[in-house]
Image (cartoon, rainbow, N blue to C red):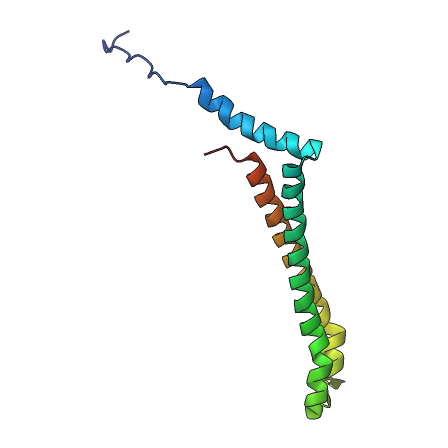
Length: 130
């Protein structure tokens, strides 16, 4: 080979097997507790269910205020209820047309936030011990 330079030896890495097994054993132990429905596993699942329920209740409150508040608004301000836009009464536009994109947006937000809760749960279960 014409370059004449020596190839440096590969760099050595120290692997400590105790660290690897300790990290894997905690994740495996947590998965086993979930599968066997031990008290720890039940507590973890209850935490996930509680987080999902809290999310559902918060977004239900948003929908209840958003859509349920419209009749109150029109009762408080009757002139607003008689307003027309393009020949259609404003209450009909808001409740019959604008409510659908609102509900789709709330549904999209729910799915996104519920998936984040599930990902946090998965990360918690698979997180190595520190």
